[in-house]
Length: 45
Image (cartoon, rainbow, N blue to C red; front, side):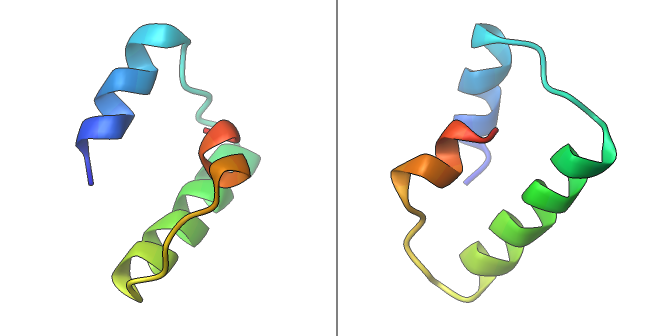
């Protein structure tokens, strides 16, 4: 969901480079597929 993005934004600035965008794309695809995200994937954000 969107709520964890808002929380992370208050902790540290979010990078908008290619690696960041690719990571977000992969996370979005996994969320759409209904796959539970692993803890290390959240750490990449």
